[in-house]
Length: 93
Image (tube, rainbow, N blue to C red):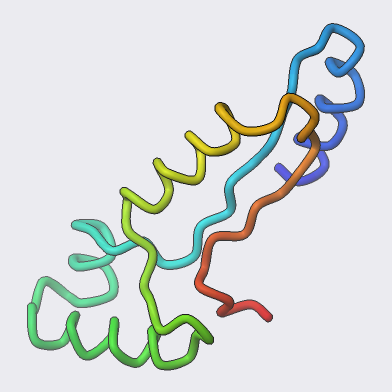
């Protein structure tokens, strides 16, 4: 995806089409609850705390965070293209 994003940005930029990608980490939601938490609320909350404690911002990404990031890329500068926006509260630093 990373190479595709950059390649499309280079190719489509001439037509003023911007291409960016959002790379979220663990997203809080049903999939993570059922997969990582095994469907157990207490286990899942513990997992989220462990994950959040390993990030500089102490936060687990939400679907709303992803939506806000996409919206900011759409409504922000007309000159942002080819970017890979990692949205993981600094986990991968």
